[in-house]
Structure formats: C-alpha cells, structure tokens
Image (cartoon, rainbow, N blue to C red; front, side):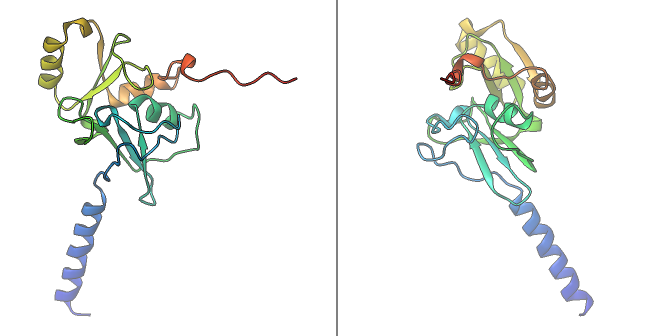
Length: 171
C-alpha cells in the first residue's frame, strides 16, 4: 500500500469515528425509556446514552439516565456518549442535543418534570438565568454539573421513590 492511500484511509477513518460520535435522532411518542418504561412525550426533558457498540438509549428525564448509570435499576449500562436535551433550545417534539459534560443542570423540586426529579438541563448560564427570569416561581434551586449530579446520584436516586409503585406483597 502506498503512502497516499494509507493517509487517505486514515483520514476517512478519523472522519467516520467523529461522525459516529454524534447524538442519534429521537422519535418522540415512539421511543421509550429503558429505566422507567415511559414513552418519551416531551423532548425538552430527554436524555440519551450511546453504548460502546453504538446503540442509543433514550430517557424521558435526565434523572432516569443518572439513576441507571449509578446502578439503581434497569439493565446495566456502560455509556460511551451521553447527551442531554437543552431545555431552552429544544421544543416538545425536537431536542437540541448537547454533550452532558457541557450541560448545567438546574435542580428544583418545584419544577415539574416527567419523573418528578425537578432536573432541567441548559447549555449555558445565560439560558438558565433567562429561564428563571421568565419563570420566577422556579427561583431557589441549585445548579450542578453533570459530574456533580452523577456523584450525588451514587448516594441516592434522582427519581423520587413514589414514582415507582411498591412491589406486590407475597401471599
């Protein structure tokens, strides 16, 4: 193999690897959360994890993904890529994905979310502050990074326990 072909193949491999490291499209009303089994009906709260084999898993609330990554339930998940929908930039039917590591999570129990976690993801501090000015009843929460939310999720679940019914009692 000559040098030119080798370099061209190498460049196309790098391009392909970058192309594969991108969020997958969400089908609102079709895709279901593997943690809580709810169909995703509001893309503004969606989250996505892609495993090392390239399979995408969609979540109806960032809390479901945080809990599953921390081993609180659902099948074991190793995530190669993690994305969150930017609440300020997404619509109910189409998420605007961002890498979870770049997101700011706003936590306030007063905020209604699909699983009652009170977690919203924003792409910037300015977008978060703009949102809070528009919705002053939501002031009083706290801001976390993805890493901080994961760390906190090691000690307790993000999805409130009352969202899952207790198991049936044995006869």
